[in-house]
Image 1 (tube, one colour):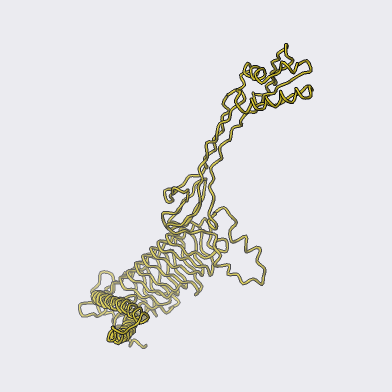
Image 2: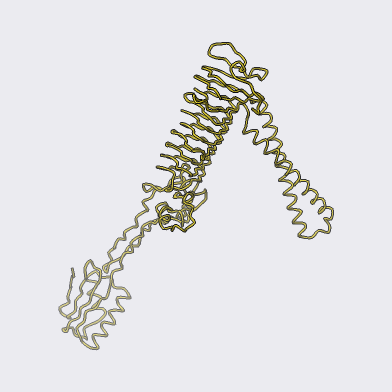
Length: 489
């Protein structure tokens, strides 16, 4: 609402607009040019509390001059408020390729034509980051700058709002506002919180909606894993549902509450222990203990330590066990051929064989490099820059090979000592051993031709002969209840 103050004697007035946002000088036809001056107008403005500075006085001088020249009534703006500059809101900007809220690869699949060579299994909807990776930029809010109206009042600036995102301790913000991962893991953004989790959690199935998983950390799968998909993790893997004909590679412990139905195509590799509902047609290598809740059917397994199948059966296939074995039943009423290789330390044997294969190759390389080093060193005074670079490279390669050979020799010694102390055979079967169950332990090879009811315990005596004890009976040679045959049989 305008407020006007008029000087009746001189025909001039001042009007303030709105909330003192501007001041106007009004000169009517009654004003005598001889009486009009900058001092008159400035005084009138000051009576209205308008600040009169040099810039206002310069405007007033031009107004006086113009009115004296044409004596026409006029209305001029002589002062304007300085508006407030409101603060800017904070901004959280994802770095390219790290926005978890963007469209996943499943959207891209819909756009792909039938002719596109797209590996749908390897298209992942998860974003993994390494420690030190910048995943976003955080710009804090600004306070803004207050303004002033024409009478000197303050026009308050509105401060910007901070970003409504919580940044977890797994991330840090540097002095430039870069949001950087502190650990390796899965980038997650949920309920206005961003973090890097060492656990990748799959809410449903590993299928085309997720693609194959290759994660540096642990993986938790709430449902199951579909046919032909691959799940790899450097730490533990937990699957609540069924694993179909998939590949599981686990750097820690593995748990699958239901089991694996692999259809002869599934593979299981576990560095630690495994706890599984059942295994059906699985090729697997478990370096630690294996616990089975129900049964093992037609599998090809290598187990680095003990096998526990306390309430289930082992039917068909070949199972190699370094440690002890406990099961309810071996074989089946259908007399399915079932082979158990006991106390063989198969994983250690495989590693030892690989070292025996690698060491001669490394030794040959070492001798070749040493010979070349000797030839170059013999003419050291005359070697050029290129030869000197080669000599430096040779010294490094020789040092590396010597270290590899030394490490390999120490590992071979350790494996051989460990294998010498292993080889125990401790078998406990609670219910039945069916015909066509075969035991291989060292040089011994026994096949059952008749049903042996449990509980039965089988093991080596001090002379590495396989012995058995049925219930509370006496200890007898296993050949009394099973046929000993040559290993080729």
